[in-house]
Image 1 (cartoon, rainbow, N blue to C red):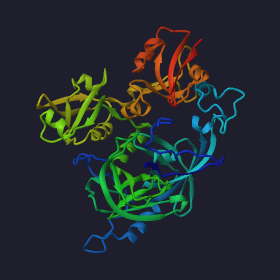
Image 2: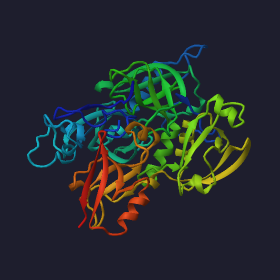
Image 3: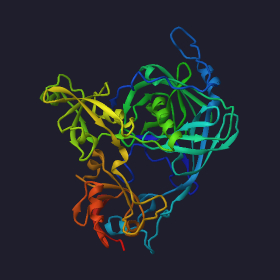
Image 4: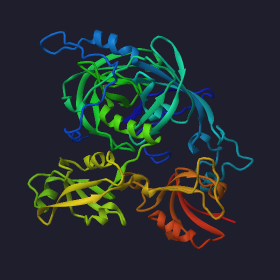
Length: 499
């Protein structure tokens, strides 16, 4: 069963378009755990002056007045339509008959004489999602996957007025995007506090599933702090059984009083449609990202630099713990914040800034939502005794290098690769112990046939485990390098001329 983003993409050229790939699948061809609520000392979400008042309950049993919620807050829910050019993946480009298993073709399919289903440059697409207005002067929240690759974004209000929207910024880590339209006096939602939600509480979703505008569905909170695999492991999702479908992406999730507590983002489905499990991003997480995007145009996330795993009862007993609670450190990255703080393999992190860590996945959420450079106090179990450790967090972008920019302009002597470290799950999926994921390609590397999604295993015969190793080879200013690359299970050396 896979998690699906909730954008309905309609491709002008008749092929799959932006936002339809699973949001928690591994990147490109690479192919439940509760987390604690955020600190209760955080102030409630700020509300716009025009935000509606809480909706009274219909009965002493706490049955919400859904009619009043829709009437009051529905006008602040918008439809988001997008258009742009979808950059086709290697799989979408097709493989000529008879060359399916030829590793050399996989590197040279773009050369003259090869026929492809879809051009390497991409195909036009149109898609749709939902969003909601949080300030009367036109600030709108939606999902990042709704506007990914979009060149034109249009917002349609409940009164059928349409506005061209500007994407102020988006953050794929949390799947949050912020839009701005040129309008004033707009209706707004009232923002709530998801930390006050309990499992079993009623919730209401409003959005545009399959393009059907202003559709309301209701359910209950099924779980809190759900950690999902993939790129957005920092998000402690709210799990509900409110029916949401493609097109609901970016729409609001209301609590029983009519306050927005989340942004509908994903579903678990084998069919592509709703099957009883949907996931919303807590609004307090979204507002943290929104504040960064409005201030700087982007969001940043912190990194500790450890690989962790869950404890079981046997492991807990071997470490002298009474309960299997905590994140067991399996590995500490060199030159990381964890290494500088003196953390070691075998340490068990049980608290972050006073927040308990019960499972390994919770550590990603607690750390990832903090800012780079921030200091955190960790409670660590080592040698059968607790101790306090302070760490200054690094940036989650520290493992990336931008030698290839968005325009594909690469300076002389550069490879033209954008790299990042493989996650533990990705290493297991592709069957490698080390390597760097190639996220973008330009210049000499692109001309040599390297593609985004390939795994760089070695350069000039030297195994690659970090960007520094690549930079060390390139510091010698070679005229050419040999890259050992893995793609679709095949390994091949690719010569790259740099002159």
